[in-house]
Length: 255
Image (cartoon, rainbow, N blue to C red; front, side, top):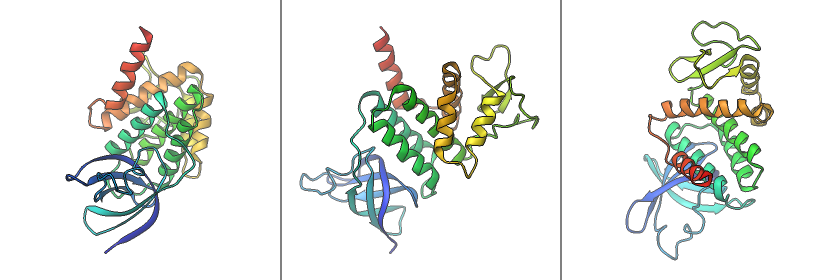
């Protein structure tokens, strides 16, 4: 029987398994996304009940050889509180992206570290521009790690280099191309090239965050729209529940 002990992880989602147990979808650093059965977790006396919360750093121990392993121990990793308000929805949005785009048991330690940094920023209540930039940087790395992000330093179909001041558009089926006159969202070549350099294998996630923070406001909005379309396409085409909730809340606040 394979046994894993004290593996850093986060709960992405859980659902009922029986009258007393839960299936936990967890994102771990060394094992990627794993499915764990938490036996008796719904009982009032269970040690799992106060611990298996989303957006909280955990240390997980499990065993078993099947597709669904048995959770043995879950301990709180400490260090932060639960995000609130829009930050909480942003965290749930990141969780939903991971559930849709990550295959089970496919480790992405760099992405795990970026997710942990994002959750920390959301829990710390960082200013809205920085929190939004952290989410964009996470989306970029998620797309890159799952093989859905084309090279950002050349046009995808022609391999022509990007011109610094010319506009380019990221599209789901065609990659990066020269922007058309009717394209509402695009970035200049120099911005795409900076993002490409920040996503290099040896670059830390903070490098991507720094580039996104440095984009002018209209470019950050344009990047959000383009990444949203790409994530929607590769996530199966269905609208993310958390994104819809966030959009509905923003519309209510604007009225």
